[in-house]
Image 1 (cartoon, rainbow, N blue to C red):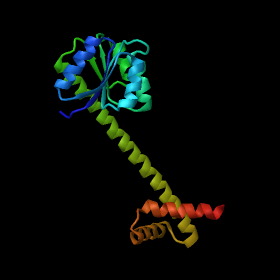
Image 2 (spheres, rainbow, N blue to C red):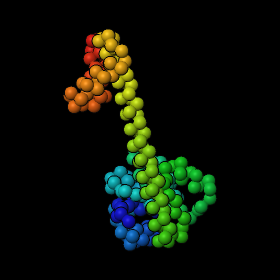
Image 3 (cartoon, helix red, strand yellow):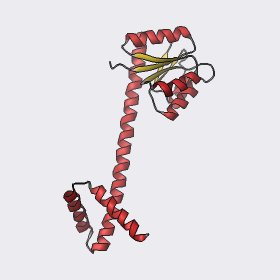
Length: 194
């Protein structure tokens, strides 16, 4: 198991100590501890943990509101720690940005499972975000190439296939992406219009 930098947030000192001890026995490093939700939010920002163990009922700001505040700034794998396991609370935790749920009493096995689940769900989210970004980028590139082809068809008096071949030749000749060449053509067209 990869060593993680953890933030442990629980208003009960005994529970914080237990989570810290268990986490460190698993090879993780607890970089910060918080006794309330307000501290958890501040420490999540300043300590840059890889994962947060966050009690649900804490003073000042509860764990669910703290999770929302933390994920609004930066999405991190958060495991909600609680003595309650009702469906409504689990649903609220998921909506708040939690990636895992750990029900007390805490055991080593439950902690391992909660951390593994949170990390896997977080990794899945990262893959989806990357794929979405790639799709958006590909769509934008395609739109730009289509616009550049239109400009070439008009300016050179060629058909769509010839315009596309011209773009490919320019891309190969300049050793640049087709979308980069298309961006230049579209940018030049904008300058001409202005």
